[in-house]
Image (cartoon, rainbow over the protein chains, first blue to last red):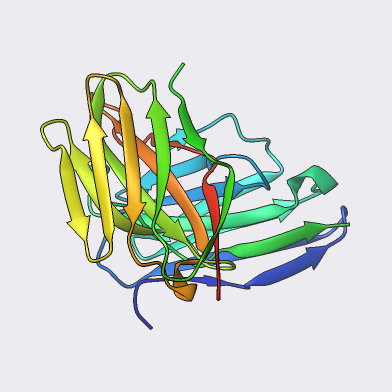
Length: 112
Length: 114
C-alpha cells in the first residue's frame, strides 16, 4: 500500500449504530487530518493531529470522536449520527502542518 | 472571513478543446494557492502550487496563473482528454501560524465528452 488509505470505502449505518473509520498513511508524515465533504459545499476541516497530539477540533459535534494512536494511523469513531452527517469523509496527511496535504480516497458515509 | 469562490460551477466541453477555470479568494494573509483535481470517488490530488511571487506555473497540459494583487487565479487546460473529467478545487493556504487551516472552494465540475 502506498500513500493514504482509508477503510471502509463505503459505510451505511443507522442513527443508533457505532462505527469507526480508519485512515493509514504510508508517507512518513507527522500530521494527519479529518475532513468532511458534503455535496456542493467546500471541504470542512474537522480535526488535526500533529505528532499524535490533537491541535484542532473545529467545533465538531461530540458524536464524532477522533483517535490517533501513532503517527501512521487515524480513526474517527462515530455514534448516534444524524442523517445530515451523510457525506464523504476524507483523511489527509502532511509532513509538518505547512506542507502539502495528501488525501486518501475517502469513506462515503450514509446515515439512515 | 476567508473565502474562495470558483466559477463556473460546472462546465461541459468536447474532447480536444481548451478551457479555463476561475478562482477568486479573500484569504489574508496569503501563503500559497493550489489547484487540486478530484476524480469521482477519489480524494483530491494536487496539480500545481503557486506562491505570492509566482505568476504562471505549468504541469503538462495544466497551466495555472496567479494575480496576487487582484487575488485571482485561473487554471487553463489545453487539449482536454476524457480523463480530465473531474472536480477541480482551488485551495488557499493562509500565512501566519494557522497554515493548516486551508480554505477550499466548492470546485468546478468539468465534464469532457467525446
